[in-house]
Image (tube, rainbow over all chains, first blue to last red; front, side, top):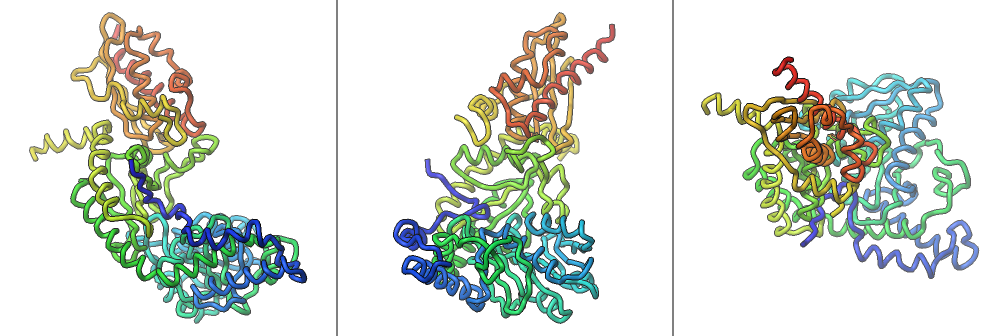
Length: 404
Length: 127
Ligand code: FES
């Protein structure tokens, strides 16, 4: 049975060309870039610098503005905590959206404990932030605005250029978390006026454990890891050379091929969207209908629980994601670790229904045949779950009584 | 087949749940919800001479909830009312070869559903 991977928001498969680029940096070039007096160190340093230039070029940034990290979580922590700490005053204020990733929202907790105030701007039912709300939330002591470029769960793309312009006018730093979007949609740090941008390599066919933070020249940050002077002092610790090389290769490929991927994925996404809209009743799409990530289709189905949908899909060879509480943290300790998706709550989906949410996120390797397979399998799975569901039974009885 | 975090037994009962449905004019009906995740189980019992002769369920919930419901109906069929009332969620979980710690509460839903259905039976058949 063919296995269909429709969960590219969780991670994407490594591009074999990226793997080839990384390969020499395990056994042949093992030097430490800090020891660049000798040949091994020099070769490693050269590779890291080349990767830095490729990542910078993906964002239209300068190579000196890229700080390599272990991934998006670290980058978000460095951006949010680093900027707040560098502002150096007591208290202060940060503006974020309601749909940020946990690595932004939870990074705010220790800041709050130190007296930083946070304003969370809401999103509309399509998951969009209103830039006017951001403008209204900025105060004289605001240090940072953080709004993601696109949300992985519902796919909505935020008006980051407008938000960046507002932040700039008010003299406030602007951070955007581009984990879900970088490498998939254009991201030009000059046009969006961003001061800080989070990137994750494994979300655009690069390796896991490699990420970056764009830090605009002149922006001050307090490093969150104490140690040596790697990465201009923003990030101590010996560089993950193979990971960085892989990230550079992935960025180069994305820059060249993004347009082609976008074209294909939009077509596949549309086919999937229309296919399931026509074949599954009681289905509600989430996120913005057009301003969304390419190849991203998210929805919830009444009377069908998300984890059960995922399990049945997997049994049918289809791998997807759910914002369901039931499937949220299966390795947790107890039921306290189960939480329905805050993103779905933010867009106003009732929480007992949040359970049915599914995200299909396609990647460059997916095909039309796979889309058609999913469209043909999903209705049967939903029907099976409905037949087991007491609430669906009640609904049908009501409908029958209503004489429909 | 084991599925993700679940045992092969859980997956079997999830994929091929026993006793899904409802019983017309059931002698006892129990419905319980799971506040942790908004899930729900409804259990129907047919009782003859102090014994459960048939049990059916409908559940809206995760894989563990559906498997627990299915396993529970198998366990209570043929049992006396007292025996059925004594069944614990632990026994249901054990019969499924275990559940992940976060999913234990889904088997609690099954235990509570029997108790609710038996209470309903007692209410309908006082004395
Ligand atoms: S019923 Fe929701 S986690 Fe099991």
